[in-house]
Amino acid sequence: MAKCFISCVYIVFICFLASCSEQSIQSSVASSPGHDVWGHRPGPRGFTTVILDAGHGGKDSGAVSPYTGQKEKDLTLDMVKRIRAELSGDFRTLLMRSDDTFVELDDRVVQANRSGAAVLVSVHFNSGPSNIRGPETYFWRVDSHGLATRLQRAMVALCPAQKDNRGLVRRRLRLTRNPEIPCVLLEGGYLSSPAESRLVADPLYRQRLARVIATAIRAQSASGDSGTGPLPPPIDAPPSKGSDKRQ
Ligand SMILES: [Zn+2]
Image 1 (tube, rainbow, N blue to C red):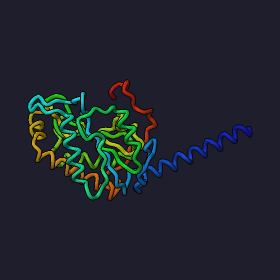
Image 2: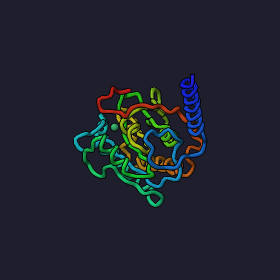
Image 3: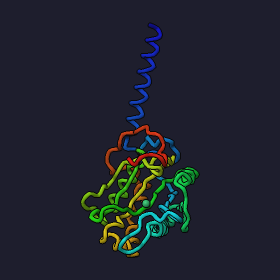
C-alpha cells in the first residue's frame, strides 16, 4: 500500500512536471538562444550568430539543372555568401564551407554544435518532377518552427509555390534533428523545373532570395516566435542516421 502510494505520488509529480513543460513550450515567450539537446522549447530571440551551411560540395554535386547545367553545390555556396553579405553588420556569420569542398553531414553537425547561441540555416536547391516548383523549408525541433515558418513565408512571397510543392515540412533529417541548436534546411527552388531553374540562374534573383532569407533571420532574432503560429508538439525521436529510410 505504502509502495503504491509512493508510486502514485511519483506519477502525479511526473504528470505535473509534464504539464509544466507543455505549458512552457506553448508559451509565447521566446526561449533564450543556446544549446539544447532536444529543442523542446520556443524559438530563440536575441541570437547574434548564424551558421550558414552550403549544401553538398566537392565530390557531391547535389542536383544538376538539366536546363542550365548549374550544380546545386555551386548555387548553395553562392547563396550563403550572399546571405552572409546581407546579414553583415548585425550578425556574426560562420560558413560551414567557403569553397568547393565535401563535408560529411555528421561533421556539419559537430561544427554546428561548436557555436553557442547560434542558429543553423542549411541551404539547398531541389529536384523532382518538372511540374513542381517553389521553395520548401524543413525543420524538426520545436525551437526551429518559428524560424522555418518565417523563412518559408518570405521565400513564398518572392516565388509562390505551385502544385505538389511540400511547403513547410517537419522532417527528421541529420541537419534538422541532430544539431543542439535551432536548425532549418531550406530548398530555394526546383532545379528540375525549367522556369525555376532559369530564375535561379539569374544572380539578381539569387540576391533577392538572399535578402528575404536574411530578413526572415533578422525578424526571428528580433521577435522570437511572435506571429509564427502555434508550436508543434515535442517529439522524442532518436538522432537521424545515414542509414535511416527517407521519412
Ligand atoms: Zn541538396
